[in-house]
Amino acid sequence: MFKLCFRLVSIFLPFLVSAKQINTIVDLAHGFSFYGDGRFCSQYMPEGRWARNMASFRALDLPNANANALLLFEPYGRTPFTAEDCAIVKAFAESGGLVVAVVSSGKSGFGELLGGFGVSAAEAPAGKAAPVPAAALKALAGEGVSLKFKGRPGSFRVDDPSRATVYVAHRNGDPAVLAVKAGKGFLLILPRGFVSEDPGYRDRDYNAEWIRPVLNAHVVREVALKSRPRGREYDNQDFRETLENGLSFYWSAYLDPCHDAMMEIVLQAAPLIEKRMGVPLAGKNASKIALISCGSGGFSSGQLVALAVFWDGFPEKKQGMYEFLTHEMVHSWVLPFGEIWNEPIATYVGDLVMGDAGYTEESARRIARNIQRAVKIDPTMKRYDLSGEAASPGVPELTKKQKTEMHWGKSFWIWEELRKENPSVLADYFRAKRLYAARGKIERYGVNETVAVMSYAMKRDMFGWFAERGVKADRAASEIAYVKEEK
Image (cartoon, rainbow, N blue to C red):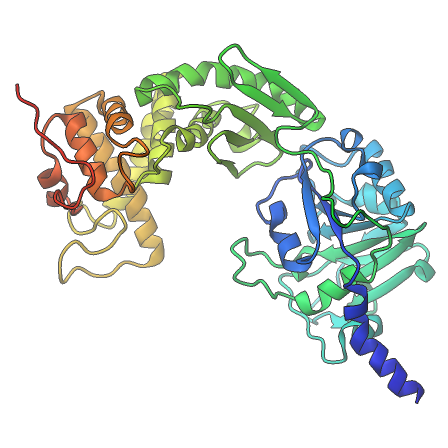
């Protein structure tokens, strides 16, 4: 009878604990990632609510954030957890919160924070022996639970093992996934190799069968179920500054040392970008610039541009930031319709602006390097279209990587060819686009419309020119009619 009861509990416990809503604050201030920005919560806390934190923990007011969980990823090397951060995180756990630390193997970014909970990293066992589910995990998720992992999951030691529940262990018994009691709450350590890495959700169920119940089993604090947790968004960081031109900057206390250097770049680059584009920004596009802690990434969502502060060696090295800043700004500049060469043209304009800022040799080198990506595949620039598809029968099919190389290289090449004939073609093109491709006038903006607008920019019919170079556009199918101007 006892065995039957235990078995029933082990079967139904995940469903019992899942009834408690998890309101999560996701910390992105110490290290930004697209995976952290919503993906983890969507995969492993689908019934809960989440909010991002872009500010310092001091500014976050975690005790009053209506959150019962705090999700931490490995901090970027330039923005580590401070002693004050560690104290705030520990206080949150001790008051009943769940702290989830997604720890990357082989890194020490969590060292001081874990140490506050009496946990330290240990050497992972040598060899290829796979970690195994511990008894606590089998009781929670079922005897048949299976583990997926990438790389060598970390190994940990706990000062007081009586406070720890081990869910996954290495063959030598060292914990790999464990929860540590801290006051009224818990610290849950998840090595990065056990969680999904795909921001596109293609491995949405990656270890979800056991990660979800483990998370749910350690939720203690009550939250207001009908209210979202209160984080600090991109435009609600520690600091804000609005310039006379309407641009607003937002940055955290962790990034304050980089603020002046970034402002200098933006103030110099903004007029250079506008001159290259030929038209001012439309509406409030790119009017908010948020600084984020990472060395790669960044994005533009129209009004908001998020910039990876440490891109390409910044702030010690400057030239790469001109390219990167311009790239993200251009994504907003081209709206309301994206471009058929959306990513390449953003970088292309960035390289031109880099040259305008004084880095002419580096600008020319980067443009030539991108063109070479396509030249290696098709020296004639006639065999493939912009997407890397064959422009005529009998042309060999390209791999996915080659198609990407073709897309980037040919986009750069086309613009350089046109610039030889018309040095102001970029500005002329975007002036024409702003005039003929306004929202309400057309419904789509594809290759047909692009070539029609280019015809206005070049002041001649460009449909034949593009067709000769493998890019086929249909004049009759274009929503924008090109009418040759009378001389």
